[in-house]
Length: 166
Image (cartoon, rainbow, N blue to C red; front, side, top):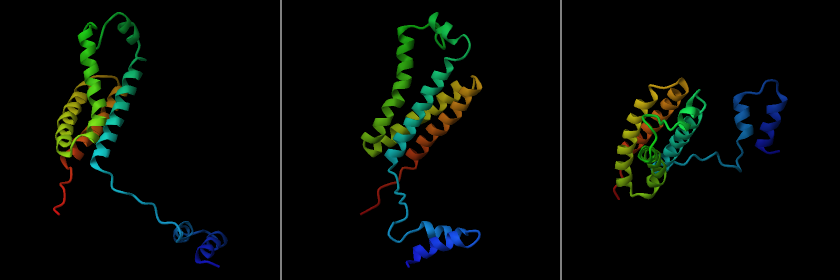
């Protein structure tokens, strides 16, 4: 009988199983342990921008449920002023930039991507801190998550590893 089979039998036949027996029963010599490869910084940045975009979208969607919000939108009132084409263009740009950062974080050369992520991530972190702090609790909660995400964008870009000398 193999050692693994003996561990399985011991695990289920002797009173309370110990963690050691459980580890032995789960670990099999024929199967390697789970690998946890190091993710490239570009992928981390892209994933952070994607997560931030989901938060932006959901926060804006849930904001439609605030009493009177839809009536104000239908009446042509935007968040800061009367809704015009230019207000909508600016609002669209504000949301288009992080959307494009998802792609640019992967596609650009490392040096350009690093600087762009530091700059755009910093701007959006400050922008979110300003806009979310004066809002309902759910928007403040999303604001905290978004600040953490864009703050991590800046952190990962700032601490981007330098290439190792050959």
